[in-house]
Image (cartoon, rainbow, N blue to C red; front, side):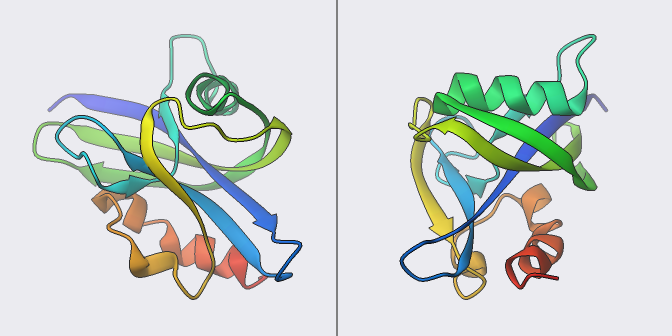
Amino acid sequence: MKTITVSGAVIIRTNPATNKKEVFATQRGYGDWKGWWEFPGGKIEDGESPEQCIEREIREELATEVHAENVLGLVEYDYPAFHLTMHCILCTIVSGKLELLEHENAAWLTKENLRSVKWLPADLLILDKVEAMLLGK
């Protein structure tokens, strides 16, 4: 089975209006998994670190500069056609407005509504750690 290695951005902010922590999620607008939700990101290119990948991917997909802080977790998941290795990287926004250049939709989710969207199966595996981040743990 083919292995695809990617980086996913876990972008967390504190909403100034509510003072609640939120995480940014995007809805796929293409492919077999169209309509499902994910942490934005993409494939790691040859010679690229997971951190370099996520900074490039967010610039390309969302016209936003992020800084890769650290790896929140590593997800391994077998989809029907391939094995996915996903580096989930905690990121902070440096500049930009998270413009949707490739995705159908996006949302800032709180701990209360984190599981209300239809997450891709691999992304589901990191939600406990994301939830802990939203709770400030």
